Length: 287
Image 1 (cartoon, helix red, strand yellow):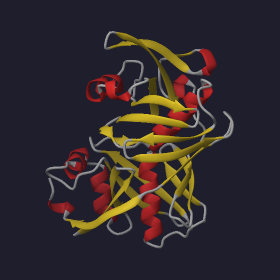
Image 2: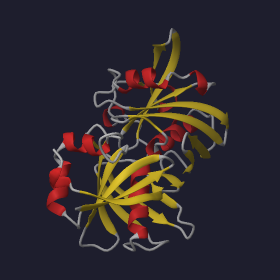
Image 3: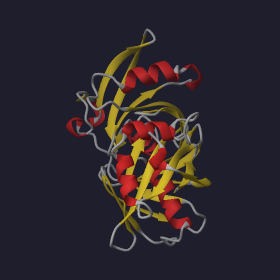
Image 4: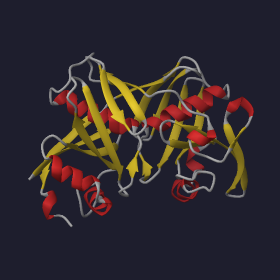
């Protein structure tokens, strides 16, 4: 039997496997998108927005994160997923609070720490506005942001692109209640301007220190939170001059604190992650 831990970060939930416990089986799972989809299914599996594999290295406080979306695709990075992994490591006494942790991801090396209140601060790196690196075919416009105007529901909308190790599309609205998340999110995720598809965020600017965001995650659909997305929304909104460099970002599952001192500096995310339950699953019997 394989032990797993179920964690959630503002309602964005993940199954966490400790690779050192059963390495060969977990490596096989990483190479099996169909099995990942089955395990993440909320009726026929455990149910989750994704699976996180926590991999130890020979170095102290240095780990590798592999993360897969519920559709079986591998993601470069995930802000809520990495907080869940860090909380897993902390609660299993693999790391100590206030100690800087290093985690390798497909988006690069990420630094993070847990404070005495079990809140996790993650250095999310520098937002990327180079279209080739996001990637997107949108061209840079005013404020140095890749941008375009699209027609959605017979109305014109400005869209913006930013990379946070994964691609993000940001669109503004004054009323999130009017957002048709399922139809608009699925349409924009596969917009032709994003060759690798994209995460989609609908943003309402409540004040210059408070943003409300609805999330459509690439490879998952509607989720209650997105850490990289919260950073992307703050970065774009700040460059547009519509919010301060530090703001609270309210997602359906809760609030993240995002801070970005300058456009050449790294952006930081602070928020919780919690254990839901620990269980066992016989991976070798699944097909």
